[in-house]
Length: 351
Image (cartoon, rainbow, N blue to C red; front, side, top):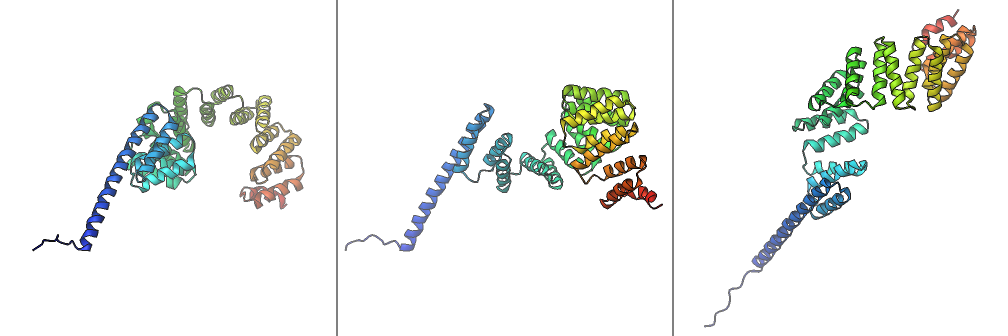
């Protein structure tokens, strides 16, 4: 009796073949993931060598081999960020988070993107989530503070700038911005101390001296304020704000000639800005040079027709010249644009 091989049902053959295919696919996937991690490690080496181009190429290959590798997207996003390729950086870091990357660093970068887009609520949310993961980089506290400052949440801004400083004692920008928050709270002495501390760690920033000058002026330390503004313009000869602020200060101390010089310099630096024209006009007003003042108010309004305070100021110049019809016209315009103070001036127009 001849023996025949036992026939294997077709379904079983199919299952065995499919199982073999799955094992093969799994093996390839494991090989690709291993190769992707090798490329990732190569990218890390390139980053340490400051070879960003090589690092991005290696990460491209890593992602191509293993498209679900969140760490590769995060590292490539960070490199794009350093190259100011914000759109690409944001896309990569968002992808990393979507794939499960929950590190504080990834959440910090998302917060920063929202901060740059001037969406402080979302920025604060991501910075807070970053901190909750245990991410303690001083930058995350600093930028959460800046986001809160933009929302006029000065108390929390001060707290976050302080936490940034606690983690980096020489963080000059954190001292400067904490000073700005304290200034907004009316804490002039605290602001002065912070601006001085910022300068002690970075004495080359004209903005720090300008801020120090403003805080000293608010604290009625006028000579010291002028010194700070002068230091600012010495460091940055085209620093518009410092010339405007020093001009305002010199007008208030009746040093009119120097005030006019400062404000004209500011106009020369930024002829399209209304602020310097308005303050030059106010300096002329203090000198009772009303015709000159009106010309400068005209220039300010040519730059920006919505400046209600300039209409009020020009109205006062017309009033001092005895031209009440023109004064009332300016005050009415200020009122129409929403300036509530105009009502007080318009009472003189009803007589």
